[in-house]
Image (cartoon, rainbow over all chains, first blue to last red; front, side, top):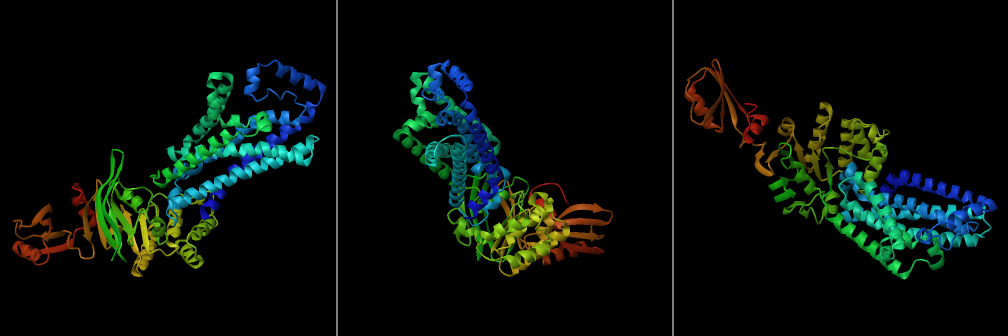
Length: 269
Length: 290
């Protein structure tokens, strides 16, 4: 487990900083919820949302969630954008997983130790998974605490709703991570990490919007995991069986291809 | 017994040739030099040996184990010092050494302490705070700490001061005497000449020659004569002349050299082995030391 521990040690600062920042955003968003209870705010938000195009509301996952006095609707709207930030964080870590040590040159040290490429790949992937699960657990705890502080939800209700939202985020986070680790074995330098991350997360997000706005492009929803976890859909329908299958296939193919590539790759040192 | 064996190693980086045909072997207990100009294929050969990259042709083994298939087992008894040392910058040296030891599942506290004292390493400093030479020393320590049977060093003395260079070679010599096998890639011909038993010369990805420094049999001699006959005996090549002093180079050995000297009948003479530097220039077909 030396590589696993080493990876956690090397990633701890950036992972902790990202997790704290996103947890802070969740806290701040939830702190605004009591203000949404006032009549003037309800009128303001309601007027703005009702004036929006139905297609756009659907694209934003708001077609049945216009009442922001309900915490599920209010947080459900905000979490979609927080999810983008969470995915950027996860994908950034995933894309950096293999290539960073090559760019930094530390892989020469690691690879000279009595470890195989399989050991390195397996332990690095496990470490990344641990960070993804850990961060998602932290967001879940913060959200449950926030729900209890600002709404009249019981502990059970808060846990159930947070588990549905962040369970979906965890699944999609792993799907994105699988593509990210594959990219990590393909890019030539860690300088390409940000570009790949932004392209992957925002690119698929835009594909999802297009699939809603342009009916002919409906099939693009399968390429947009962010669409699978729009809160409105997640609360009402959960993740659909087809989405589980597509997601699992992407995870298997992404991780499998990354592993095979890393086993026979000439390290860039 | 050959500990490191490399046969017909071929490695291309796209159109660029890393190694064309590298073949040599290193015997147990030997300090083996590996010399060549930049881009000749030294580092490529070492990277294949260490499993960092994969060859397209040929094969390589350490202690009979294949460097691709058995890389994990090989590294359990092989220490490696890279030419450019890059470790985790924010880690303190002490932590680096602890984590390094953890890979080998043993207690190397005593050996680590001895080597830290020998190479004067401050374990409290962060790696990024160290000078180039001290970074190199940490890398050497990481490689030597688990008492490897095989030690592969790529330019180990670059950045080290002369005292540390001497200490390193004394340490390597001590380990070689105990049976460790050392492969030393270097640009420093003087250190290769002084410490290595054999040396492989590589150019354009091909081994040009393997010279046994312990026998000196394959190296030329430099004959300096003062006065005597102006004729140049067969087998001697005039390198330079200054007044009555003439310097020759010859591939002759023993009695043949004496006969040539007798024919010239000089007032005075010296015969010495050609320096490694001169040999290098000659082998690579370059104008130089002579």
